[in-house]
Image (cartoon, rainbow, N blue to C red):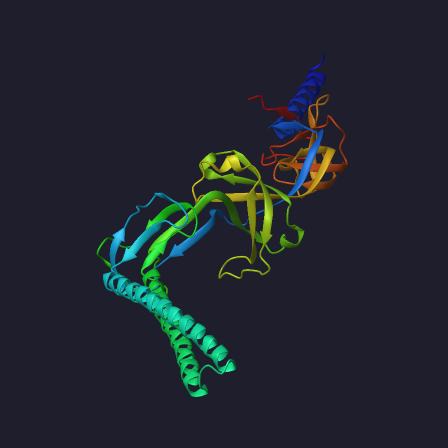
Length: 382
């Protein structure tokens, strides 16, 4: 080989090596991805709350005496279980009790007087009837008979007056008992004492008009629970009474509780600096699930508004721009961009109506840099 030919050979070799180096440096880099298969299954369209909801006891009563006074009896403590009708608190009322005892004795005396007046009226009435018969037989003068009849009428009026006096005293006793009731707090239903405001011998003051004060006793009926949660006004029209739902609470980790929509507020809440929402109440389907619940837990709800069974689905996180996915082709170990048509969707899965087939492998690590059509892919093996 001549010197001239050798120089050309070296030049061509350098060009090839440079081209190879440029290709190596600029070739598409392999992207490590996480994948999942398109499979058939169920997809649910759900509506979720926009802010944390609250677990509520099925009934709650904020109890306060109907009058002010000093607490003389407090038979319960926070956390106690009580029965309907049980006395919880009583204010000092010895004066009313003493007056009630006095009036009860007056009622007893009035009843005795009314009974005596009734007997006298009955005796006088029978005597007047006998006088009437004697007049008809001409055995007595009308003047004498008239005196007896008048006396009978007086006795009858006296009896009616005694009855009226007795009823008046009974009414007074009723007023005193109502005043006594205003000094007592009794449980309106079975429940748990959640909070007590006040101690023995302290004074309780009723709320002035328009100025709320803390209740003396807060009573909760924990035999059942429900969740109140706000949903966005845009989602509200899709929610209906008796729709199935799921409840998730931080206190129970990833556990789901079956629920059902029982109420939808008929108005929209417009809270400052927050989205407009509608409150929804969800009750629990399985009563046994609520045995360890505590009122006040934070809770989230998922209301199932529509269900599609046995449809092709992929993880929702595989979607880009709502209609684009990357499919991993195992033969060429490359990624292929595809446009898909979707149906129902939730946080976990999305129905694919067109663009994929069962068994296709899609990339779910869509946050990986370097994803594009034709790039080589490597499946991440955890």
